[in-house]
Image 1 (cartoon, rainbow, N blue to C red):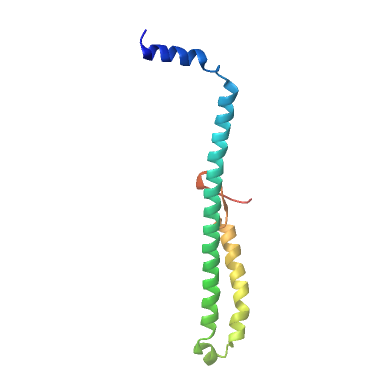
Image 2: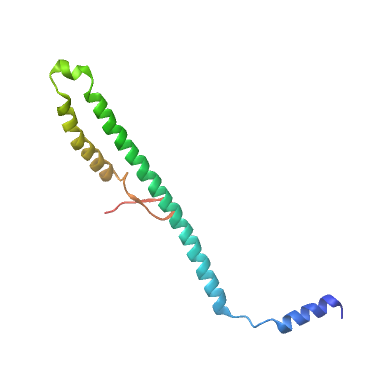
Length: 117
């Protein structure tokens, strides 16, 4: 009997018996870790999308404010306060339109969009 055979025989004889419950626990833990990583990636995408949408809305409001300061409004008799008064309803219409079209839907599994309806 060679040393390798003897080592294998001793390792098999002294090894603890297989416990199937441990494999099930390990598989469950690995699945939970993978699900947690997917959730973190989705959360990052949601934050990124939310920040991008907020930046777009801020740019829209800033554009409306700048647009209201143009001299053309003074020549047609439309004061800047009127344009600024129109801005919030326009932003609300834009947000409602995005929500209705599904652009603001929450992400589902595998990055698919899931409507909130």
